Image 1 (cartoon, protein in one colour):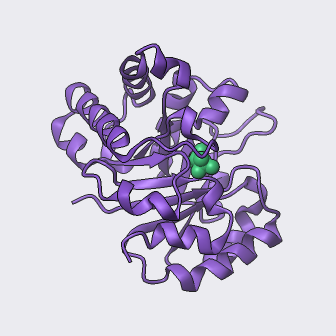
Image 2 (tube, rainbow, N blue to C red):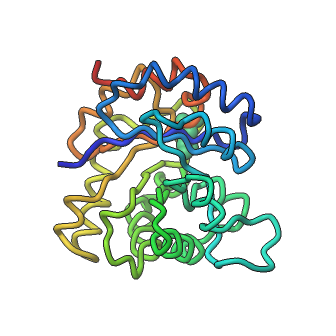
Length: 248
Ligand code: 13P
């Protein structure tokens, strides 16, 4: 059985005080959640939110991690720095980082291996653009991102994959639940072929892209979908709680 995991990706939103307030409002709303609940916050919010989540069932995540131990990497953050503040999860290779910050399958792979090595749980993002989907390249792109991004990972069950079709992010355009289910099934097949069938069956794969309270139940009812990576709908506690409590 794969335990569902709902993670919020705040992206570049919320000051530390706003982030702590959001979490304090969220705590009672999600305390009975049956899934793993994670908030992936901006680096500047990590300390304030780590204090706010104490004693709750909300887990703390970051939005990026560098692959080096330490050194001359201005603007980057190391795994040890995250771990020191109680971070457990880290988003790696989000399409916005691939699109705007030069992230590649190779850097995704390096960050993933470092995160795992250090004991962080990577949430590795993959997904095709609209052009890629419309030109029939979805499977080729997802296969490449999966195989290259996860190369050398010994135990795939120690990470989470987020399938986020780029055309569904922040657009209000969700993949249909059947589309998302089928595509995630394909990713699982690639993992079974490339890595091992047992880990393909055990690895958790989230859907992300305009997922919200009103569509979470239907998406989560799909066999292959093990959770959600939530952008816009994670920025208000009641909205995010509605996704977390999708089965209530
Ligand atoms: P939205 O939920 O705002 O579409 O964002 C999805 C996403 O990119 C989460 O990482």
